[in-house]
Picture 1 (cartoon, rainbow, N blue to C red):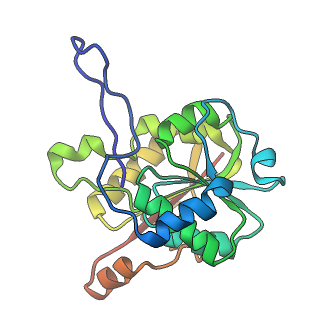
Picture 2: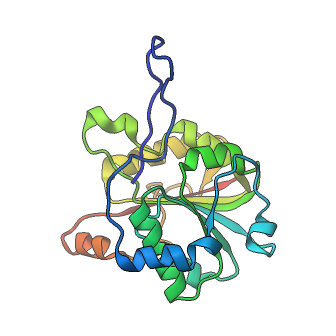
Length: 238
């Protein structure tokens, strides 16, 4: 899940800044703990605060996709298996989710994923060079349903400015949500960013067909059967 926080009043000595998450408790399973021990040393990256050399990290030169907030890693592992020719840099702070993805990496013998268990905004600011990414995935970020909490939503202009600057020309930003008011906000925010162009094209409602690489989750399938909508928004860097 994701979070964005506004600046604090001037009398606060340490103002809050944009963050990509809210701390939540969770318990790791035995299998997840074993995955941390067995494959964590290879696939977990330390936050260094210095620009990354993707070729060195992945031991190859390949297109790199950033994913922010992968939850339990089901979609991440599916997409990485579907696209072995691409590198996936995945940011998630919640330990059970990280453990679950490490377990999937081990079970499916995936080699093209690396995980940073750190706030994605700090990773973007300090570790991702400008024009370095070929794509960004943000799937089902926390919608913060209550109006008074809307300011906590991840997809807002300050983050999109950062992401657009780090996409290569032709790189894409793909967001998906099952909450229509958030879909409308995402579409509005991305449309306002001058470096980004909507792939949906003129004459459409602005939303893209679900790209074939994004799997339907169990939660999403259940929602569709109940008549709930899912909205994909895909923009590219001009």
